[in-house]
Amino acid sequence: MFLPVIFRFDYRLYSLPLRTPLRTAHGPWTVREVILVRLEDEGGREGFGEMAPIPWFGTETVAEAAELCAKFGDKVSAESLATLAPQFGCVRFALAMAQSEIRWAGGPHPAGSPKSGEGTRPTGGAPQEAGSPRVPLTALLPAGRAALDVLRDRLESGWLCFKWKVGVEPADLELGLLDELLAELPPYARLRLDANGAWDRRLAARWLQRCADRPLEFVEQPVTPTDKSALFGLAADFPVKLALDESVVRLDEARRWQAEGWPGVFVIKPALAGPLDELAAWAAETRADVVLSSAIETAVARRAIVRHALAHPALVRRAPGFGVGDVFGDRRHDGPATGPVLDQSWADSINPADNWRSLPC
Ligand code: MG
Image 1 (cartoon, protein in one colour):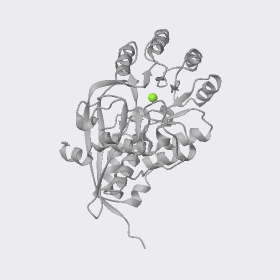
Image 2 (cartoon, protein in one colour):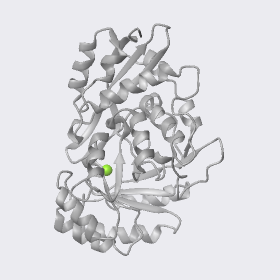
Image 3 (cartoon, rainbow, N blue to C red):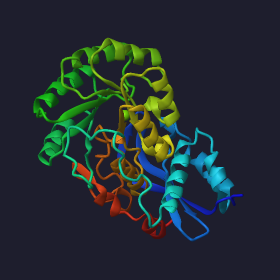
Image 4 (cartoon, helix red, strand yellow):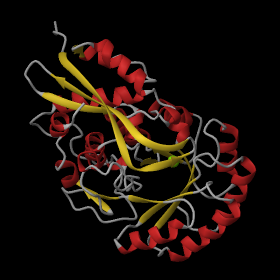
């Protein structure tokens, strides 16, 4: 008979001011609330996790996550953590991450080594050397004309993949800017657009018509996330690849769209989607066309995500959207500045235990 695995459990809620407020469809975002969790097994090994909900994006709220944490008390069983309801994607991500770190404390990383046949190398970026995977990242361009200056600057620094937010300024202005951006883009670089669901079907059709003969990597969330018939219709009507983001916040939602035959890309914010192991297994088994993206998580969660991404080629066939720059303005939360290419040294430089012990709560 197996004895139940029991962990000591602790959690802390942080309100972290953002260096510059982020523009969202729901107004400026000025403070990032996250919950750091700590598990310790009976052998004294500890593991950390991070809950970084974005309720207006479709996740649980921070209050709901905190309520669950309060209910756990100071001891939790592995069994109870395994049966958390699927709608708690952020809580499940954090607790799986912490357990995974404990399980492998002092041993090889849980993600292991990439298995042959599991996926292909990332494309469109720096080559991978055997034993030291490196992935190119996507730089985020600001909405409107400001994108041009940022694009020139990032190209000079060696960035190869860009994402531009659209659906913010009037369409005529943005369509003109699109051609200015493409004129600056060398043939080896890539541009993806993100409308964050801001277009109606008619405007989306106008954009996609315009994009049809332009070299775009994909267009992300052209219309509102729940309008399945518009999304499938647009994907069928235009040659440009479409990506779902807000439609697929959790992995179970991505699975549903996939089962219904979604022909495009899945933008997955791992910190919102659920356990990293489940995400990696899904991407490898189904060969889903995945691009990883930031949920404005802190370096604690990003470290785990990056380690997984580097170990699972199926997760990084497309350049992850981690080039969001300094978000918090505090290195403990941002981690070291990232260049156009990421490797293991970035993750190795972050120690979640230091963050846990040094941060006031
Ligand atoms: Mg998006």
